[in-house]
Image 1 (tube, helix red, strand yellow):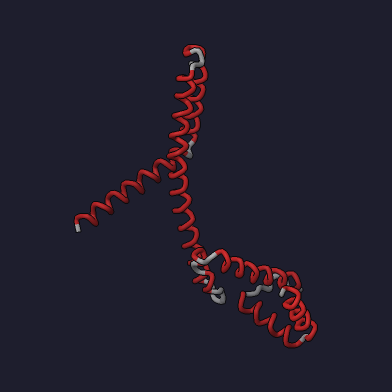
Image 2 (image 1 turned 90 degrees about the horizontal axis):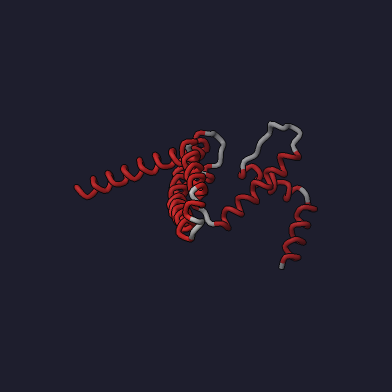
Length: 168
């Protein structure tokens, strides 16, 4: 049990540190400080005869900071992305008539996401044909409308069969 509490404390410490570091590095003070360091470094160039050591100081410093910032930025983006996904999931779950299949779609494969994208392209195409700009469709409604059109219009069926043949 003590290990679990220690891990929680470490995670909380890192979380607090990462949040504070993210806020600071995105602030005006951090930008002004970084700019001041570069200016001071540049001004000291003549004092050090623009030596390799003088150049190595700024190169090493900026490389280390950049390396650490990559991980800090990724941590912040992961947290923000997760929060946005949860908010979107809540909106989907709260909307009557919304497709619950959209909840947690970030876990789908690229192929599955492409398939969903095709559905939404279809929905967008249908929406453009609507006279009422406030009319909307879900994936299920789009599929039902498409199936009913295929059944009632032989041209659509014939066209689909030709498309299938030409792809093989």
